[in-house]
Length: 251
Ligand code: SF4
Image 1 (cartoon, rainbow, N blue to C red):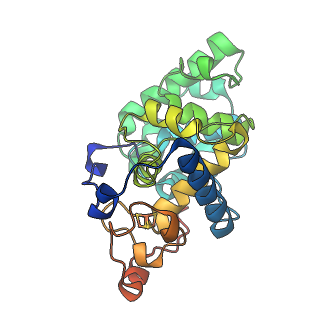
Image 2 (cartoon, protein in one colour; image 1 turned 180 degrees about the vertical axis):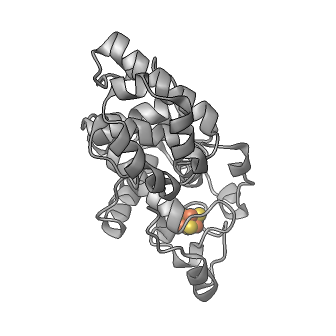
């Protein structure tokens, strides 16, 4: 899972500049319609990180910083078999973890985070992963994005995951103008019922990975083109656009 970056900033397409801003009611209606269409397009959207416990998801999400879910899924079978509890991470040999996760990049910082995570969970939460945002964000290597992934996917607590794809698509849909992930989370959250937050996150991330790419979105092959104010940001010719679609899977 990739963090939001300045790279995603892009000029507003001429088509969108020329249009008046929709009313709040129209914005909400259109946003919810886009969400419904995306639900039809991606009925089985889910996190593409492999995990079977909250701790495994927390670890996998920390490892996913600045790399792909596929890259994380390649190292976690060995990591999860060797380290099963928070105490295992707390007492881990640094070199051993580094060796297992080296291919995910930033492996020294990630190793420090995983060992610190294990220690913090043991010291303050009895070795369990806490279920509250305010506790999760006190853990080493855990920001709001990671906390929302864990809350939404391991505990069923609605959360909006603002990664690079989510932020880019939310701006293209006109749901926010902000590059600040916390503001994006608040502004998009206000457009949808809480019960939709987790699945909305998966759907936007899936659409961003497959169709609405950062550099050349496949507008001519996009299932929500008729609702998108940024239609025309990428090629609209169906044949050209179809070549840009990445079918996945990404895990
Ligand atoms: S129409 Fe283009 S910019 Fe809008 S969601 Fe589809 S691919 Fe992205």
